Image (cartoon, rainbow, N blue to C red; front, side, top):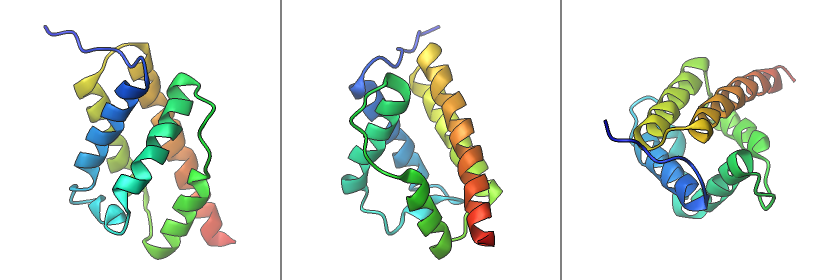
Length: 126
């Protein structure tokens, strides 16, 4: 069995995020959410976010929650969309990496998806 590498640095995070978005943007269920996104401009922010989450890099600046609430006003995000996002993320992590940080990447994504779905649904009631 081939041992997959561990997530150890920004290049690893970059590879993970890029592979994930290669898949997500073409996905039948969630790809439409990315149709108007300038991905080359946005990817560095996403990579920075995941570097903060997984590597403790303090340089990330942004508000992913606010951005997703704005997106939900344009294109409604439902639980099955978050489930698909999570399935794609976890399968991409498993395809590329192993170890504690890979497990953490999946667990953090589960938490993020759950919190984001809850906050998006709450914002609809306001």
